[in-house]
Image (cartoon, rainbow, N blue to C red; front, side):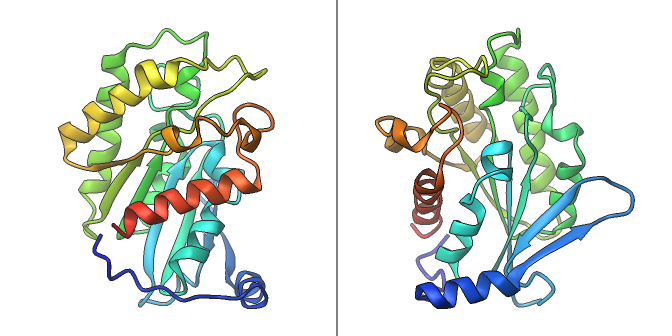
Length: 228
């Protein structure tokens, strides 16, 4: 994305007012999924940003923080689904979930995909090839959209000591190299949130999910990449 991303600075009072009127919940009768969108998506002039991911997207303030940075010319849709992974061998493949269909229906101009944390589960026996193939399919589905979105894939943040049976080493040893391969295969850019956060375990109280400071840090890294 060019450096022409339109910014609008907001003081704290304005931010709170904007968020108070801009959070819209849309439920589709054919699916149990819920889409949380920030930033007036019903106005055609708004640039739709689809944030795809797992609970690190769905259950944190990252998407709201990102919208705050982007400003009112954008509508940011939260299409995170807790527990989802990339691999078809994972317990809950993202492409099998209704959140994926909602993300496509959002007709985004920008897609930010942050998956891979749940693929680090110690009980999984997935292969690198399965991860890569399924991630390529996921990106390809967004590339087929009439909206012709610009797509970024994001490395998962670090995993620290946790009670969720998620490997602290699988992300750097397997997931990140696989993501880099996917990016080369489908010609998209990678946003690295792993490296800047590796020394910030304090942002991850349960070892996996970012707190408010961690969410702000992730949003800032993503925003800087979009604006580069």
